Length: 194
Image (cartoon, rainbow, N blue to C red; front, side, top):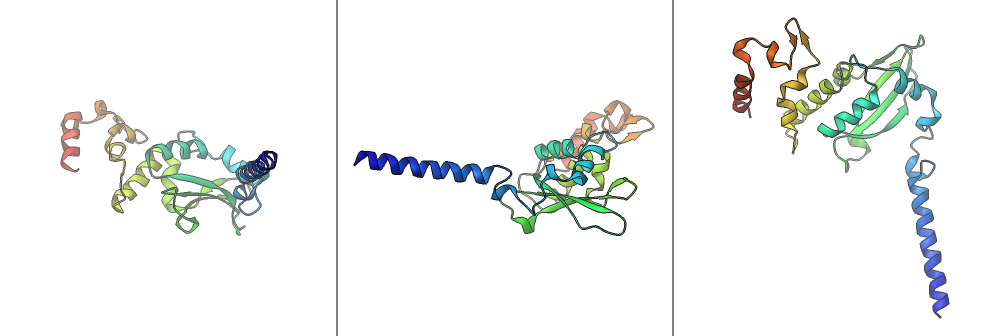
């Protein structure tokens, strides 16, 4: 009797582990989107390896950093429809883990026949300036839309504006500001706007 229970337990456990592995690995159901995986598509690999922001960072580096400071949950890459001006590569993301596919956002690149790659999604254009600009634009949008638990510290930190260079220096560097905009005044201004 005990041998039969052990046998059924082992079969059930094996079935559960097998199904778990099948769903988790990229070849399983959960890993498939439309049959095109990132590793199988040279166009996606081209965007990942050649597109750079002005500060030299690749898209995946930007997404990794932005996901730490804003509501940004990466979902995946896919190839879009071919247009008269080139082929499209789409990266999808969501603001929250529980969001369904209809609540996803996308960043779209267009790869021209000559190999030039550019972002075509207007809201993602700040990404061309670097991760901080993209994060600031997303966080500002979260504030505008009254999202909960917005990272206002990141939004109000002057060092996050260093992607802008003026004649006096980096925008986030207080030593480059005129005397009347030094850090003490900046902090007082931020306190008034909270």
